[in-house]
Amino acid sequence: MKQHQLWTRLVTQLIRLFRSRLLVKMYLLQEQVLSVAWLLLYAVFAGARYIVVSDLSDSRLEIAKKMGATRTINPSKGEKVKETMDSLGIVGFDIGLEMSGSPKAFEEMIDNMYNGSKIALLGILPNETKVEWDKIIFKALQIKGIYGREMFETWYKMEQMLISGLDLSPVITHRFPVDDFQKGFDVMERRDSGKVILAW
Image (cartoon, rainbow, N blue to C red):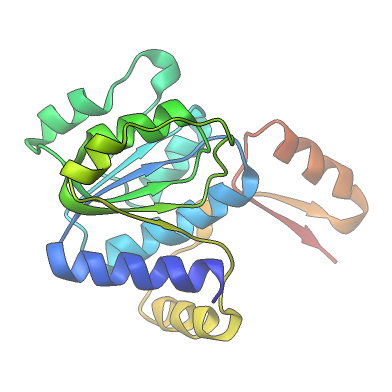
């Protein structure tokens, strides 16, 4: 099983079940931005009621808004998940996608999940990360680690989404001739981009 295929199945099943409230935490890695963009698209197509995305980069949060996020949160500006939940009139999330690898972000996610909800982990948490197991147990949370994707199945699903009118353009933030590949790496290292395309 590969990363996008597993995430797609998880998001699809849960959104169908709950017409869900989805919380996504993403920081740092370029690869994660692309994964989140894919998941946001899928969540919107599947009918998620509320999609809340948290990130430290305003430019990436703008991408999330264009891809269909209901609300975005930048913790570095003092914005809180709880305040956003209050403004939406919700008391928890059905699905959590933890992509940051931040212990603090993971702890906040656990605090804001509904009883019996599910969390998928892609962000690599430090080995010394401590969690309050009583919260996980008493909330009956299901936590699943995800890595990899099933290539062809993912492509077939994306093809159907494109046929349905899916617009991927907000994810593509930069284009360079292949000879300027270094500019592509530079913009990714600044963590200020979505998908970077090189024209051959």
